[in-house]
Length: 622
Image 1 (tube, rainbow, N blue to C red):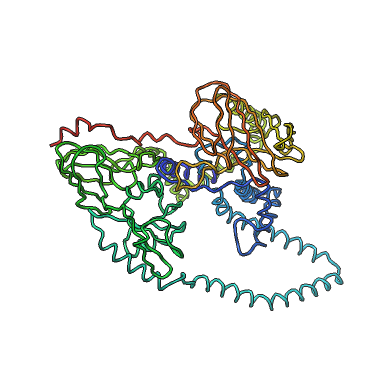
Image 2: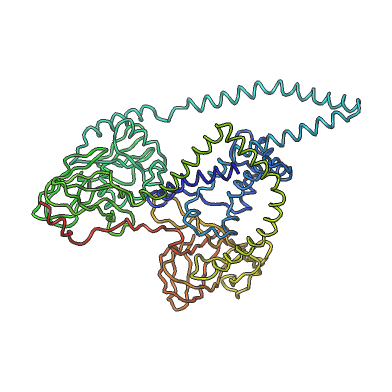
């Protein structure tokens, strides 16, 4: 009951936040391992990662013992540990049809290992306690001669531990101290870079805005920003920054849009920038971009000039000199809280404009009237108010639980009722099991039927008792051979050629700077060189589908032209189709995914493009 109450209260508070992250935030999933890979990794090193692997492995044995302990608290801790560890592999997500899904696509399963850490530690303690108890029982029933032998062995081990523990302790503490005091390489170069960055930051003006881009995939430069106030970023995924709408790529159009003036790299000259402007500070190389013009605000449509007169953490103020409204875009990522207010006090709608003509990510834009306009980030979000009722109810429930537990008279009454309920529980549980299990089976069967009807959510071979895919393989100069299907392993095998099965892939993404989505797909690997795979799957296709492969794949859909691609977005009209795939399979892993867009991408109706012409309300502003 306590666990159920905790989960309900936590969900009521955190689900609205999760919805906001899904709508406005970046995603940082990690590739989900298949069960064989997970088991192999766990045998090589425990998860969660620890310097005391023996205790983690003791926790694994504690899980097995705890599940059969017939003690509620122990079973709960063991079951939680097992569920969190099983969640590290793709089997539960595929078996329960949780993928493709918006949450699973963005799920960082390695975080589950961190959640499992306290439960695993408790299971390890339980396993050690069981071992100690059995040892004490054996000691009490042992003959004196056996006790003497055991005591001698224990004495030898104790002496060895006494000699080893001090050196082990000093070695571990020395290693930890050395790592804690480790200085970043090239301290002199970093000091020079800090001085240079501070000087450049002092030169930045509202109408001459500039950023520095690091050609790296690590985040140390954010310390430079914190120290010197020089705006910096890198193009690789940045978990430090959560907003989804940001710079698209390193094309000249993107760098110009986001006012990138300097390119900085460590250890070698940058790939971008003007070589004639290159300077070296220790191991750091800096180049400037010729395309930089310092305009944080630009006129995209209309005639006139725009000048940024103020720019800080709270607002951006622009001054437009024109005879009629103009469309202005800012060099910063879009967020629905942005709003624009004219000097007259009139509100001007803010739109999400693609940062570059062919881009998917958006920047702040607005049709503004001549004169001064102030942009601020204090407007309302489309999600404001969602979940408020449940959050309030959860808070009230939490307060009620605390009050009831602190008032003795109420607490005693509740405990008496709980005791009476506990006495009746066995009979109730028996009836619930007799009625609930059949109902649960029926519901699962109905869900399975519902999932198989309607448009295909993702292309899968099938890994259940039955299968619907036709999988064939051949050498480049041979005949096609049917691959047999194993109901036990869920694997298609062509002897001597290849194996193919369903798994999770991380090939798709909606924008370059984020990590790949977790989506179901086909996994295959060949036993020899020059092997070709052919797969046929029938199903209903309707809507937009995203496709990606680890190498060029030929995809042919009935009533459609065949296409060869590694990545594509394809729109299909409704109807039953037959999908045929062909690909050359390497000895290493080959992967392919084909999923319906709406299963992984949430609706973002707030991303409204600016109209072609200024709205009438903007033209009326004086």
